[in-house]
Figure 1 (cartoon, rainbow, N blue to C red):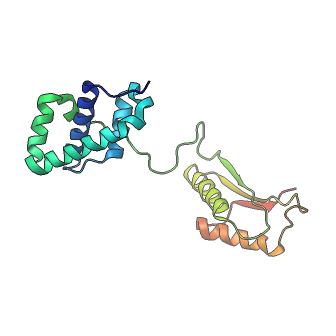
Figure 2: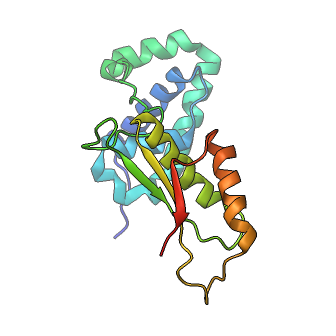
Length: 184
């Protein structure tokens, strides 16, 4: 048996599309409306494929309404039919920078970076080094550069990589590692 949206559901889709059009000055976007609908009504999630064309239609109608009648008329329409949709939603606070290390105490943080010296640092290695360096700096801790050259059969070390990686560390962090050596 195929599920089809009832009139109440279609009206809800139109209201959310109108809300999105009001929020974005007559430029509602179907993907944004789908996300909002699925977030507001968990019961509609299993029917996303069936709802997609209806949502696209509702978005087109909402955008056309704003284009013809104006943004103020769309706000009035929404205020009369669903004033709760006009309430501004709190914006999620975005974290800037690295998260705090749980239980870390200034001066007691020790971080280790141990690349295999089989060539220059890859982007992935460089990322790990920069993150460890940032934490060491934030917590006034220690960054240890230790070379993981214990499996010389699978990844034979390049003698020049030891110096290259130390130079790359200084270049990426703006300072050398606090300690360094060869892991044994």
